[in-house]
Length: 482
Ligand code: GLN
Image 1 (cartoon, helix red, strand yellow):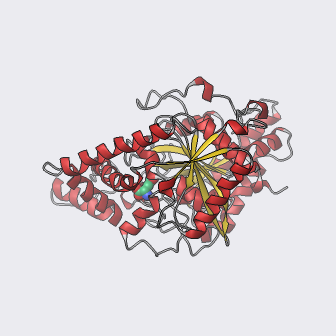
Image 2 (cartoon, rainbow, N blue to C red):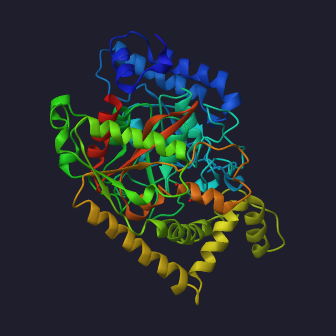
Image 3 (tube, protein in one colour):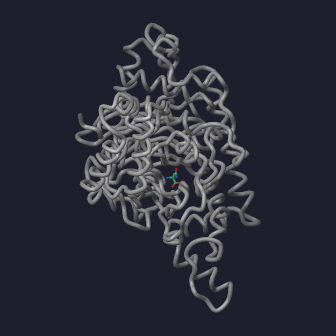
């Protein structure tokens, strides 16, 4: 049995039946990391001894005949902007290069309650700003399908780690596509939950009205298991909510799957026409259109719908996002956290610490955001963008009266070459054109492998109504079986 090929359920069953030990499972992944990560560079930190001793603990539980939770002993990798107590948390930035997390993020607490094994922390664009992982201060991650190409971003390390079987699953964060885009580029599944479904406590803040943590996995079922483990109201995050009961079906048995056998005809899928316009790579469009046809052949009703404000979502996002980022990043002053430069007075310490600590993209966002929020420009930029945001939300509300879910490409492009877009920020921002609307509207969305162009994977995006994670997961599971 190849231990790094298993899904969560398979690994869980194998552990319970003592087909292999948690220690063996953990070691198999650590060996894979040793062999592969030199070329992929998905990890920033690997905690071999902590992971192995945690695995040993699970083996003791199992030998003692104790019931183990579904994620017990299952190896995970965590994006390096999510705090794991006593472990370095860099956010991909020089300014936090030596920062040790003083507490666990709520999602980590929840994984630890289930006795998960944390292998290490994964690479990302600095402060999650980017679409390729090239903005990391610690070097780019490489796409496991073609090492000369990007893995997508900003959770590129997490997606590449899952895509090359260096972990069974990973956590990422998604502010404008950072779970879905790398999932698409690395041929894996990524779920961006509804805003508020997962606590943000202990996630290094980027743009607080957009950020969400979510799973990156091999299968849709695995995404469901991890999502159920990490979601729910948290008193440490006032924007988090309990998901309505109907959602908590605990990975439903096939007969409970609402659109399962025989009922697929009840499902109404919308395809927004604005997502298939000039600019999309024809080979990507072809794979996505074929995926949609597969649903149709299975008896699903497909309807063309319109989200008329789609074209304005990207520019609005790139005002709102830097505005919030500029406020959130004010805390890195060389005193409170991380890198502290020497200076003759406090002001010089502030200025030099930020100058030495922040990379180009981070500075760009701080400048853009500060500008958009400044008096005299606020109305023309930030306020305007917020109005567009409302329009984008209304577009979705309207179409979701007619259809249950939307199908779109996750990215208009195939994974591109390292270096191809990094010099041109606008070309990089364009990669996010299909993902940012979902964050502006706070909706859940899934990216799952739809097919290949040559050896490069293409992701299909399934967008749902707020708190209907289970529905998009069901629709994703249907696709896996088509
Ligand atoms: N690429 C987008 C940006 O740079 C999204 C990033 C993210 O989701 N963290 O803002």
